[in-house]
Image 1 (tube, rainbow over the protein chains, first blue to last red):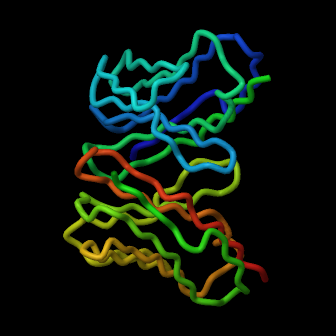
Image 2 (image 1 turned 120 degrees about the vertical axis):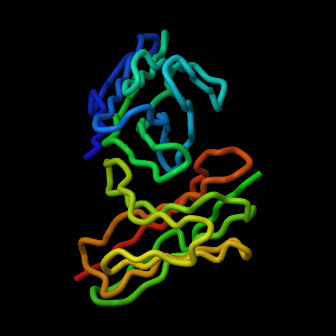
Length: 111
Length: 112
């Protein structure tokens, strides 16, 4: 069966520091991968999605970037965090345009 | 531009009640619609996926219907339990963007 992992589970970082969040999927090949952010009191916002290694589409211009160095690995990064980057970050995967499955999330607090 | 709305925003019911959560979307050109559950501080759990050609899907006490032409879906929860307390999100996979568009959710509380 397929599983999706995210780490770390929680993170507290100062403004201006770098960020790296990792997501890995097991039990499937060539999945579509997604990064979402859920800010307090707001809905889910799609940040990036990837249909293959090295293929990244950005949905919203922002302070973040994403990379997919391996088939089942998706990384969310920032060179310098802003206060507005705080939120709950969720990774998800799907096989094509089908059911999406989400990871447990990373709670990021920028101080 | 596809927009997804969920009504009500919050709902509090006694244990044992049958309840209906509503989801509406503005563009009927969708591949599928998905219902999720989110517990506080947790990720999303997929409950049901309805393809655009289907009218309903069932899983245990949950039944989701889809009326694509009118842009509506309902999630029916039978014999609600305190463990059903969570936020329920619907999302449509829209043909024009190939991405999931989420509603803002219904926060459900079932009290004993």
